[in-house]
Amino acid sequence: MTTSLTYFNFDGSRGLECRLALRLAGVAFEDIRLDRPQWLALKPSTPFGALPVFQHDGRKLAQSNAILTYVGRTHGLHPADPWLAAEHEAIMQSVEDLRHKMPGRPDMSDEDKRTAREEFAAGWLTIWAGTVSSRVQGPFLEGAAIQVADIKLAVILKGFLAGTYDYIPASTLDAWPKLVALAAAVNAHPALVKLT
Ligand SMILES: N[C@@H](CCC(=O)N[C@@H](CS)C(=O)NCC(=O)O)C(=O)O
Image (cartoon, rainbow, N blue to C red; front, side, top):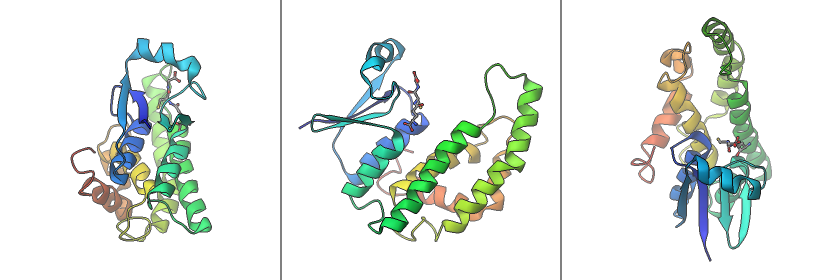
């Protein structure tokens, strides 16, 4: 029985969160990292023409949130209660919304990017941060027990807290200390500390 996660050869967001969830769950897996030519050759055989793809027991699963939910459900890292589980899935989907809504298409002028990102940081991002923060018991979503949704949050938060995105200062999320603390707690988790 082989288990693998296929992603690109960098610690990019969706691949990283799935790798971290597998490490946290203690799953032994092959960490397959593709370069561009390898990806172009593989792409037509992937379920949605995108990565990450998780393979287990001869089956393939795509979509980062589906992979995280599967790993979480099978290793006690996703709520057993259906309502709580759905809340966590909503939060994970909101992270995907965030990735899609973040302005910054390559064809944007620098000035347009600045305007769009400043509006985004003052608008949609504040609604997202307030909603997620209000759901955090601390340090993790459900208190002391880390879940796969915490990992997904920590990976997206890390970029903001590091000031990775031009025109969105690293201090932007300081108004939501529970989010800052959640990211720190995931990064400090003994199973993940060397990986995040
Ligand atoms: N909704 C998908 C998005 C997958 C996705 O867009 N993957 C990107 C990398 S993060 C990709 O495969 N890009 C290469 C391509 O589309 O050719 C998920 O959450 O897994």
